[in-house]
Image (tube, rainbow, N blue to C red; front, side):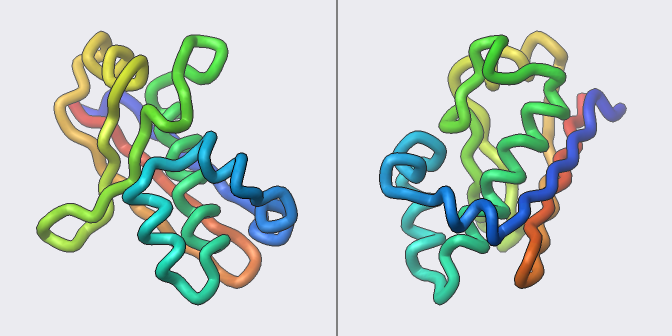
Length: 122
């Protein structure tokens, strides 16, 4: 059963202009930083991961005002090679309260935009 669906799109030119070391530290976990830093155009990876975090919040029906933090959602590469999300902190609590048993993540980006879709299943 689907418990929640979230989608988000990021304008990469705008995101790149705002991207700083302080923002990276605030939004991303070490594995995400390592992945993005290894790319020729790291802002595309950061933008897609930021979109995934926003999409996860939307799928949970909660956000910063509810105590969630961007670092509570981590974009990971699973052993199968697919991308996924790992929840911690208040995001994990919110997912548990809703009966989330599994999540699905899809990421895409072009030169101008990054998009993410999160589906939460129970």
